[in-house]
Image (cartoon, rainbow, N blue to C red; front, side, top):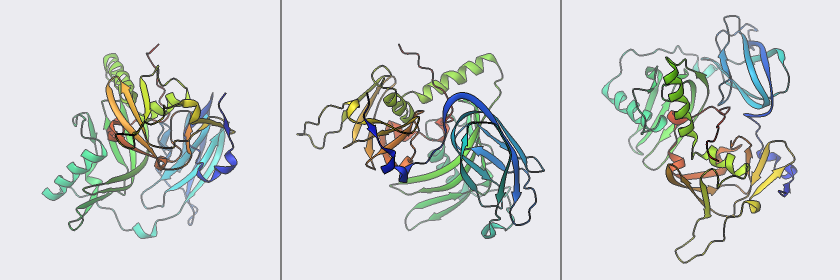
Length: 345
Protein backbone atom coordinates (compact mmCIF):
# COMPACT_ATOMS: atom_id res chain seq x y z
CA UNK A 1 0.00 0.00 0.00
CA UNK A 2 1.28 3.44 -0.89
CA UNK A 3 1.93 5.83 2.02
CA UNK A 4 -0.66 8.59 2.18
CA UNK A 5 0.34 12.24 2.06
CA UNK A 6 -2.07 14.77 3.53
CA UNK A 7 -3.18 17.49 1.14
CA UNK A 8 -3.54 19.99 3.96
CA UNK A 9 0.10 20.93 3.51
CA UNK A 10 -0.13 20.95 -0.27
CA UNK A 11 -3.14 23.14 -1.01
CA UNK A 12 -0.96 26.03 -2.06
CA UNK A 13 0.04 24.25 -5.26
CA UNK A 14 -3.13 22.45 -6.24
CA UNK A 15 -4.57 23.56 -9.56
CA UNK A 16 -7.26 21.21 -10.73
CA UNK A 17 -7.66 20.70 -14.42
CA UNK A 18 -7.93 18.23 -17.24
CA UNK A 19 -8.46 14.85 -15.58
CA UNK A 20 -11.58 12.78 -15.99
CA UNK A 21 -12.55 10.90 -12.85
CA UNK A 22 -15.42 8.76 -14.10
CA UNK A 23 -16.80 7.16 -17.22
CA UNK A 24 -19.90 9.37 -17.33
CA UNK A 25 -19.96 12.35 -19.68
CA UNK A 26 -21.98 15.54 -19.52
CA UNK A 27 -22.86 18.68 -21.48
CA UNK A 28 -22.21 22.34 -20.71
CA UNK A 29 -24.17 25.22 -22.23
CA UNK A 30 -24.60 28.91 -21.57
CA UNK A 31 -23.91 32.43 -22.77
CA UNK A 32 -20.97 34.83 -22.95
CA UNK A 33 -21.63 38.55 -22.45
CA UNK A 34 -19.85 41.90 -22.24
CA UNK A 35 -19.70 42.83 -18.55
CA UNK A 36 -19.98 46.59 -19.04
CA UNK A 37 -22.51 46.67 -21.88
CA UNK A 38 -24.47 43.58 -20.81
CA UNK A 39 -24.54 42.51 -24.46
CA UNK A 40 -23.74 39.18 -26.05
CA UNK A 41 -20.14 38.58 -27.15
CA UNK A 42 -20.30 36.86 -30.53
CA UNK A 43 -17.90 34.11 -31.64
CA UNK A 44 -15.74 33.96 -28.51
CA UNK A 45 -13.68 30.79 -28.07
CA UNK A 46 -14.61 28.72 -25.01
CA UNK A 47 -12.64 25.60 -24.20
CA UNK A 48 -11.29 23.23 -21.58
CA UNK A 49 -7.60 23.94 -21.79
CA UNK A 50 -5.42 21.37 -23.52
CA UNK A 51 -8.30 19.04 -24.35
CA UNK A 52 -10.39 18.32 -27.44
CA UNK A 53 -13.39 20.07 -25.86
CA UNK A 54 -13.74 23.55 -27.32
CA UNK A 55 -15.99 25.62 -29.53
CA UNK A 56 -16.93 29.14 -30.60
CA UNK A 57 -20.02 30.88 -29.31
CA UNK A 58 -22.64 31.78 -31.91
CA UNK A 59 -23.61 35.32 -32.90
CA UNK A 60 -25.82 35.57 -29.80
CA UNK A 61 -23.05 34.45 -27.45
CA UNK A 62 -24.51 31.00 -26.84
CA UNK A 63 -22.28 27.94 -26.62
CA UNK A 64 -22.51 24.19 -26.00
CA UNK A 65 -19.78 21.70 -25.10
CA UNK A 66 -20.87 18.07 -25.39
CA UNK A 67 -19.77 14.67 -24.07
CA UNK A 68 -17.29 15.90 -21.46
CA UNK A 69 -16.03 13.18 -19.09
CA UNK A 70 -16.67 13.91 -15.44
CA UNK A 71 -13.74 15.67 -13.84
CA UNK A 72 -12.08 18.95 -12.98
CA UNK A 73 -10.95 21.29 -15.76
CA UNK A 74 -9.55 24.73 -16.44
CA UNK A 75 -12.13 26.54 -18.57
CA UNK A 76 -10.91 29.47 -20.65
CA UNK A 77 -12.67 32.04 -22.79
CA UNK A 78 -10.73 34.11 -25.33
CA UNK A 79 -11.88 36.85 -27.65
CA UNK A 80 -10.04 39.60 -29.50
CA UNK A 81 -10.52 42.92 -27.69
CA UNK A 82 -11.29 41.32 -24.32
CA UNK A 83 -9.22 40.11 -21.40
CA UNK A 84 -9.07 36.31 -21.31
CA UNK A 85 -11.20 34.65 -18.65
CA UNK A 86 -10.20 31.47 -16.85
CA UNK A 87 -11.98 29.53 -14.14
CA UNK A 88 -11.84 26.11 -12.55
CA UNK A 89 -14.90 24.01 -13.32
CA UNK A 90 -16.01 20.67 -11.93
CA UNK A 91 -18.06 18.61 -14.38
CA UNK A 92 -20.22 16.12 -12.49
CA UNK A 93 -23.58 16.70 -14.18
CA UNK A 94 -25.17 18.52 -17.10
CA UNK A 95 -24.95 22.27 -16.60
CA UNK A 96 -27.22 24.70 -18.42
CA UNK A 97 -27.56 28.48 -18.34
CA UNK A 98 -23.91 29.07 -17.49
CA UNK A 99 -23.13 32.77 -17.72
CA UNK A 100 -19.69 34.27 -18.23
CA UNK A 101 -18.84 37.95 -18.54
CA UNK A 102 -15.82 39.33 -20.38
CA UNK A 103 -14.10 42.64 -19.68
CA UNK A 104 -12.80 44.81 -22.51
CA UNK A 105 -9.04 45.01 -22.83
CA UNK A 106 -8.65 48.78 -22.79
CA UNK A 107 -4.93 48.53 -23.57
CA UNK A 108 -5.60 46.76 -26.86
CA UNK A 109 -8.68 48.42 -28.27
CA UNK A 110 -6.83 49.60 -31.34
CA UNK A 111 -7.97 47.99 -34.56
CA UNK A 112 -6.01 44.88 -35.45
CA UNK A 113 -4.81 45.00 -39.03
CA UNK A 114 -3.50 41.87 -40.69
CA UNK A 115 -0.70 42.70 -43.06
CA UNK A 116 -0.94 41.10 -46.47
CA UNK A 117 2.81 41.15 -47.03
CA UNK A 118 5.75 40.71 -44.71
CA UNK A 119 9.36 41.67 -45.29
CA UNK A 120 12.42 39.41 -45.33
CA UNK A 121 13.18 40.11 -41.67
CA UNK A 122 9.73 38.87 -40.67
CA UNK A 123 10.12 35.77 -42.86
CA UNK A 124 13.36 34.93 -41.05
CA UNK A 125 11.73 35.49 -37.66
CA UNK A 126 8.66 33.39 -38.47
CA UNK A 127 10.87 30.48 -39.51
CA UNK A 128 12.76 30.73 -36.22
CA UNK A 129 9.47 30.91 -34.33
CA UNK A 130 8.06 27.86 -36.12
CA UNK A 131 11.23 25.88 -35.39
CA UNK A 132 10.90 26.52 -31.67
CA UNK A 133 7.11 26.50 -31.31
CA UNK A 134 6.18 23.62 -33.62
CA UNK A 135 9.45 21.67 -33.45
CA UNK A 136 12.38 21.15 -35.76
CA UNK A 137 11.88 17.48 -36.63
CA UNK A 138 8.47 17.74 -38.24
CA UNK A 139 7.21 17.74 -41.81
CA UNK A 140 6.33 21.37 -42.56
CA UNK A 141 4.05 20.27 -45.37
CA UNK A 142 1.92 18.36 -42.86
CA UNK A 143 2.23 20.58 -39.77
CA UNK A 144 1.69 24.26 -40.46
CA UNK A 145 0.31 27.48 -39.02
CA UNK A 146 -2.51 28.39 -41.37
CA UNK A 147 -2.67 32.06 -40.33
CA UNK A 148 0.99 32.79 -39.64
CA UNK A 149 0.51 36.39 -40.83
CA UNK A 150 -1.19 37.31 -37.51
CA UNK A 151 2.07 36.84 -35.57
CA UNK A 152 4.13 39.93 -34.74
CA UNK A 153 7.73 39.97 -33.55
CA UNK A 154 9.99 42.16 -31.47
CA UNK A 155 13.75 41.65 -31.57
CA UNK A 156 16.30 43.04 -29.11
CA UNK A 157 19.74 43.00 -30.80
CA UNK A 158 21.57 43.76 -27.54
CA UNK A 159 20.39 40.49 -25.95
CA UNK A 160 19.59 38.67 -29.21
CA UNK A 161 16.13 37.96 -27.83
CA UNK A 162 13.13 37.32 -30.06
CA UNK A 163 9.63 37.88 -28.70
CA UNK A 164 6.39 36.94 -30.44
CA UNK A 165 2.75 37.84 -29.89
CA UNK A 166 -0.59 37.38 -31.58
CA UNK A 167 -3.92 38.93 -30.72
CA UNK A 168 -5.72 36.24 -32.68
CA UNK A 169 -5.68 32.47 -32.10
CA UNK A 170 -3.13 30.52 -34.11
CA UNK A 171 -4.66 27.82 -36.29
CA UNK A 172 -2.24 24.91 -36.43
CA UNK A 173 -3.17 22.17 -38.86
CA UNK A 174 -1.45 18.92 -37.97
CA UNK A 175 -2.02 16.31 -40.64
CA UNK A 176 0.55 14.05 -38.99
CA UNK A 177 -1.68 13.56 -35.94
CA UNK A 178 -5.07 14.57 -37.33
CA UNK A 179 -5.82 17.70 -35.30
CA UNK A 180 -6.51 21.38 -35.82
CA UNK A 181 -5.16 23.21 -32.78
CA UNK A 182 -6.65 26.56 -31.79
CA UNK A 183 -3.72 28.09 -29.91
CA UNK A 184 -3.70 31.31 -27.90
CA UNK A 185 -0.14 32.54 -27.54
CA UNK A 186 0.31 33.81 -23.98
CA UNK A 187 4.01 34.51 -24.38
CA UNK A 188 7.07 33.57 -26.43
CA UNK A 189 10.67 34.58 -25.77
CA UNK A 190 13.78 33.05 -27.34
CA UNK A 191 17.32 34.02 -26.39
CA UNK A 192 20.59 32.25 -27.27
CA UNK A 193 20.48 30.23 -24.04
CA UNK A 194 16.83 29.99 -23.14
CA UNK A 195 13.40 29.38 -24.61
CA UNK A 196 10.18 30.27 -22.81
CA UNK A 197 6.75 30.02 -24.32
CA UNK A 198 3.27 29.46 -23.00
CA UNK A 199 0.01 28.97 -24.80
CA UNK A 200 -3.48 27.76 -24.10
CA UNK A 201 -5.90 26.20 -26.53
CA UNK A 202 -7.93 23.22 -27.64
CA UNK A 203 -7.79 20.48 -30.25
CA UNK A 204 -10.31 19.81 -32.98
CA UNK A 205 -10.40 16.44 -34.74
CA UNK A 206 -9.73 16.58 -38.47
CA UNK A 207 -11.74 14.39 -40.81
CA UNK A 208 -9.55 11.71 -42.41
CA UNK A 209 -9.75 11.41 -46.18
CA UNK A 210 -9.64 7.62 -45.98
CA UNK A 211 -9.49 4.66 -43.62
CA UNK A 212 -5.79 4.45 -44.39
CA UNK A 213 -5.20 8.02 -43.22
CA UNK A 214 -7.22 7.41 -40.05
CA UNK A 215 -5.04 4.40 -39.17
CA UNK A 216 -1.95 6.46 -40.00
CA UNK A 217 -3.03 9.15 -37.54
CA UNK A 218 -3.73 6.59 -34.82
CA UNK A 219 -0.27 5.10 -35.29
CA UNK A 220 1.40 8.53 -35.22
CA UNK A 221 -0.48 9.51 -32.05
CA UNK A 222 0.76 6.40 -30.29
CA UNK A 223 4.29 7.11 -31.46
CA UNK A 224 4.09 10.73 -30.25
CA UNK A 225 2.91 9.57 -26.81
CA UNK A 226 5.45 6.78 -26.35
CA UNK A 227 8.40 7.85 -24.23
CA UNK A 228 6.90 11.28 -23.55
CA UNK A 229 6.81 12.93 -20.13
CA UNK A 230 3.08 12.18 -19.85
CA UNK A 231 3.72 8.54 -20.72
CA UNK A 232 6.41 8.31 -18.05
CA UNK A 233 4.35 9.98 -15.32
CA UNK A 234 1.29 7.93 -16.20
CA UNK A 235 3.34 4.72 -16.04
CA UNK A 236 4.88 5.80 -12.74
CA UNK A 237 1.42 6.28 -11.21
CA UNK A 238 0.20 2.96 -12.61
CA UNK A 239 3.38 1.33 -11.28
CA UNK A 240 4.23 -0.32 -14.59
CA UNK A 241 7.39 1.56 -15.56
CA UNK A 242 9.33 -1.55 -16.49
CA UNK A 243 6.59 -3.14 -18.59
CA UNK A 244 6.11 0.16 -20.44
CA UNK A 245 9.79 0.32 -21.34
CA UNK A 246 11.13 2.81 -18.78
CA UNK A 247 14.26 2.36 -16.69
CA UNK A 248 14.89 4.92 -13.94
CA UNK A 249 18.06 5.65 -11.98
CA UNK A 250 19.19 8.49 -9.77
CA UNK A 251 21.63 10.79 -11.50
CA UNK A 252 25.25 10.60 -10.36
CA UNK A 253 26.39 13.77 -8.62
CA UNK A 254 29.94 13.03 -9.75
CA UNK A 255 31.85 10.19 -11.38
CA UNK A 256 32.87 8.70 -8.04
CA UNK A 257 29.44 8.82 -6.43
CA UNK A 258 27.29 5.73 -6.09
CA UNK A 259 23.63 6.83 -6.00
CA UNK A 260 21.04 4.64 -4.27
CA UNK A 261 18.69 2.51 -6.38
CA UNK A 262 15.45 4.12 -7.50
CA UNK A 263 12.56 2.61 -5.53
CA UNK A 264 9.05 3.55 -6.61
CA UNK A 265 7.57 2.99 -3.17
CA UNK A 266 9.90 5.66 -1.77
CA UNK A 267 8.82 8.42 -4.17
CA UNK A 268 5.15 7.80 -5.07
CA UNK A 269 2.36 8.80 -2.70
CA UNK A 270 -1.41 8.79 -2.86
CA UNK A 271 -3.34 11.77 -1.53
CA UNK A 272 -6.77 12.21 -0.03
CA UNK A 273 -8.00 13.68 -3.32
CA UNK A 274 -9.25 11.21 -5.98
CA UNK A 275 -6.93 10.70 -8.94
CA UNK A 276 -4.29 13.03 -7.55
CA UNK A 277 -0.84 11.71 -6.71
CA UNK A 278 2.38 13.14 -5.32
CA UNK A 279 5.98 12.26 -5.98
CA UNK A 280 8.92 13.38 -3.88
CA UNK A 281 12.33 13.29 -5.54
CA UNK A 282 15.43 14.03 -3.51
CA UNK A 283 17.62 14.52 -6.57
CA UNK A 284 17.66 14.45 -10.37
CA UNK A 285 16.68 11.19 -12.04
CA UNK A 286 17.64 9.72 -15.39
CA UNK A 287 14.85 8.14 -17.42
CA UNK A 288 15.73 5.76 -20.25
CA UNK A 289 13.14 4.45 -22.69
CA UNK A 290 13.65 1.38 -24.83
CA UNK A 291 11.70 1.90 -28.08
CA UNK A 292 12.65 4.21 -29.62
CA UNK A 293 15.76 4.27 -27.46
CA UNK A 294 16.10 7.64 -25.77
CA UNK A 295 17.27 9.25 -22.55
CA UNK A 296 16.05 12.19 -20.47
CA UNK A 297 16.75 13.75 -17.10
CA UNK A 298 14.18 15.18 -14.69
CA UNK A 299 15.16 17.66 -12.02
CA UNK A 300 12.70 18.36 -9.17
CA UNK A 301 12.05 22.08 -8.75
CA UNK A 302 9.71 21.76 -5.77
CA UNK A 303 9.65 19.53 -2.72
CA UNK A 304 6.39 17.86 -3.73
CA UNK A 305 5.27 17.27 -7.31
CA UNK A 306 1.54 16.75 -7.84
CA UNK A 307 0.30 14.71 -10.80
CA UNK A 308 -3.11 13.82 -12.20
CA UNK A 309 -3.68 10.16 -13.05
CA UNK A 310 -3.46 10.95 -16.79
CA UNK A 311 0.17 12.01 -16.31
CA UNK A 312 -0.45 15.76 -16.23
CA UNK A 313 1.67 17.95 -13.97
CA UNK A 314 -0.47 20.30 -11.92
CA UNK A 315 2.43 22.74 -11.82
CA UNK A 316 4.43 22.56 -15.07
CA UNK A 317 7.35 24.29 -13.35
CA UNK A 318 7.69 21.62 -10.64
CA UNK A 319 9.93 19.55 -12.95
CA UNK A 320 12.77 20.74 -15.15
CA UNK A 321 13.20 18.44 -18.13
CA UNK A 322 16.40 17.74 -20.08
CA UNK A 323 17.16 15.45 -22.99
CA UNK A 324 14.69 13.86 -25.38
CA UNK A 325 11.56 14.72 -23.40
CA UNK A 326 12.50 18.41 -23.48
CA UNK A 327 12.40 18.43 -27.30
CA UNK A 328 8.62 18.04 -27.46
CA UNK A 329 6.85 21.00 -29.06
CA UNK A 330 3.34 21.86 -30.22
CA UNK A 331 3.84 19.85 -33.41
CA UNK A 332 3.91 16.66 -31.31
CA UNK A 333 1.32 17.70 -28.72
CA UNK A 334 -1.74 15.54 -27.98
CA UNK A 335 -4.98 16.47 -26.17
CA UNK A 336 -5.04 15.85 -22.43
CA UNK A 337 -8.02 13.55 -22.98
CA UNK A 338 -6.07 11.35 -25.42
CA UNK A 339 -6.18 7.75 -24.19
CA UNK A 340 -3.10 5.67 -24.93
CA UNK A 341 -3.66 1.96 -25.44
CA UNK A 342 -0.42 0.14 -24.78
CA UNK A 343 0.42 -2.76 -27.09
CA UNK A 344 2.89 -4.22 -24.61
CA UNK A 345 2.15 -7.28 -22.53
